[in-house]
Image (cartoon, rainbow, N blue to C red):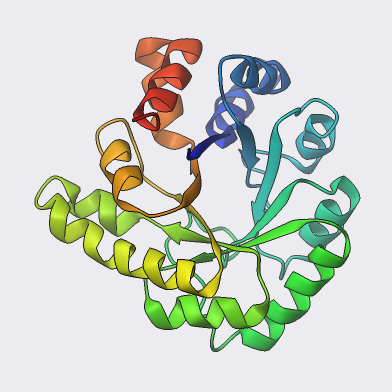
Length: 239
C-alpha cells in the first residue's frame, strides 16, 4: 500500500506569518502521525521562510514514522543538516535560491556526476536517497545511473491536466513508473496531488511506495480539520 507522508511546510508558513509558536509545528507533526500519517516531510529552504533548520533538528526525536527531508544539496548548510539529523530519507530537489515552489525535476544526465557524489554521501551515512524527476524516461534512466534508491515523480502536470483528460494526464507517469520498476528504482510522487486526483494516480502507478502531500492537505484541513483530513487522504490510498 502507498504510504502518505505529510509535508508540514505550510504549517510553518502560517506560524511564521505572526511569529511565536502558533500553530505549534511540533505538535502538529506528532498529531499527524497519531491521526494516520505514515511519514513527515519538510523542505527547509535557505531563507527559512517556512521550515527552519532548527525545526528540523527539533522534529528529529519526535517523528516516529519516516522522516523525509527535501532540498537542494548545492546548499552546503542543507547537506550538513541532513548529515546531522540522519532522516529516513533525503529527497534531492533542484530548487533555485528563493524559488516559490518546486517546478521541475533534475536533469539526471547533465548533473549525473554531481548526483552520484551526493547520493553516495548520503547513502554512506545510512540515509535512503530519492531524486526529484519529471516523468521522462531518459531522466529515469539517468537517475538509475546515479545509484539512487528511489525517484520522486514531479506530478504537477498530471494534476494540471487531470480535470480535462485524466487518462492522457496519467500516461507519461505510467510509462515512467514501468521503466523505474524495470530498473529496480523505488517510486515516490508529489506536487499538487489532492483529494480529487490522488486515488486515480495511485491506482494507475505500479508499485507506488509513497506520496508526499502538503499544500492541498493543509488547505483541506481548514475545512475538514487536521485529523479528519489526514484520514481522508489515507482513505484515498486504500482501495
